[in-house]
Image 1 (tube, one colour):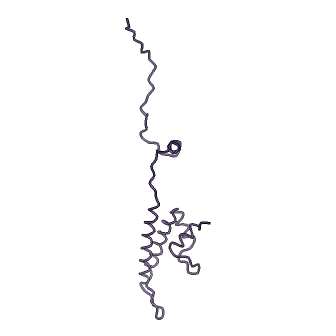
Image 2: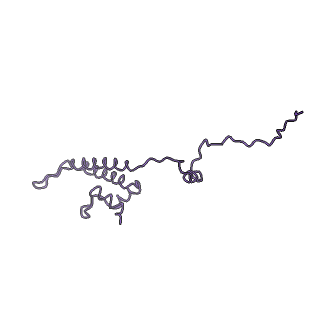
Length: 137
């Protein structure tokens, strides 16, 4: 079975360890509701993580270990950009009006904004007239 979109987002932002999760499921699900494309949702999650780390002290000393948050912030900002590029590559161009069924489905859509112009809009049925030549000898 394919992994759920939530799991895909967690994987892409490498936030997969439950004990140290940086993002809550609710936060990821919110992003997925805003951006159904999971790569775009992941890019926005990476932006949030970048901001989180940017807001922290540049570095923190714990014993003889130094954590540098600035690097983490940049790492997530770069990841966000990479994911956005990947997400935008999957968008395929759409050419309408090629398929007869497609065209009819679009025309039948009652919610669609009606076009200002359409083929045959000026065709007016002319009154029936007798066009026999009365002057014929």
